[in-house]
Image (tube, rainbow, N blue to C red):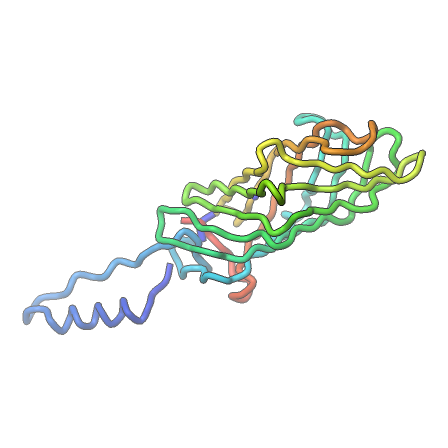
Length: 226
């Protein structure tokens, strides 16, 4: 919820030295460019650097949803959501890049849960979360035993304010990165109620599509997975 190379001075120097050392009349073999897992602004382009900040908001016209079933439409939906992550490693492809998810927000949220009248807030707790992106486009967000993946939804109800706390059963969320639209998509990721009254449904299914994914450190260049 991707394919994110680098032409270094060292490679250029190596190519020059190889050309100088070639036999007269012969051409040195071209030096292949090394793709990294995360590149910008094209697939197989320049490697996203360690410590660069990756950001994205919801794809235009979509919502982030927390529904009570995988196929229904009852629950909470948010018209605005975004995330920010710092790149920790970006090895040669194929491989797995690692990031730290430092921020994720949800605003402009509404509810159609019977007995509720509005949404005060949807908050992600215990950040940062460890995040990995594979060359196959698998995105995984992981919590820890002491800082689990947790979201709190505060709703207005006919009986006053209610607070619903949700956690994942596996302490992880899994999404898919797609180069065609520079997106990361989460579909029906299961969150289980950790605490809250009966108006908080027992299971929340989280879905969201973030696009375009961009390297904010490099002028918001689109990021790809290789």
